[in-house]
Image (cartoon, helix red, strand yellow):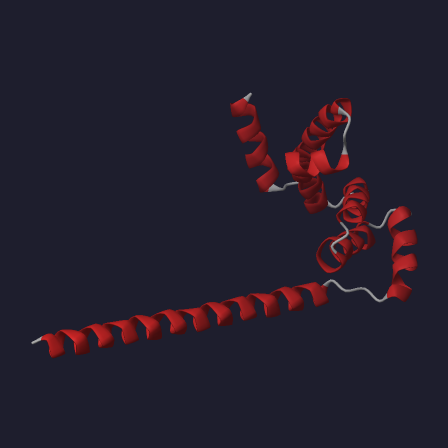
Length: 156
């Protein structure tokens, strides 16, 4: 009888080890797939260094497309968030309605605001500016902006 219990216990331990190591491999595979997806997404927004000055000039002269490309390049590919913040503001100013929403949403993010502005007066201005950009995006047909403005007005 005790032999059966030992064999059963050993079998149960082996089963647990197989399940645990198997799920670990599945988790590794999931993480690997996420890294591949992230790399592919990052590569999509890559801009050759030689094109950046041209895009900057285009953006500063009114191209929303150029400014948005620079935003995504710095935000997704380079991970330079302060530079990305600058270019999303330019894209919003240049009339990109999605950038207007994203910029407004970004300016509502306390973690972001804390990382960019240390002065409390500037933080208040950023919140006001966020509402401006969300209203602009809403006027330009961005449904998410309309929904977010409704949520904000309910919470006030």
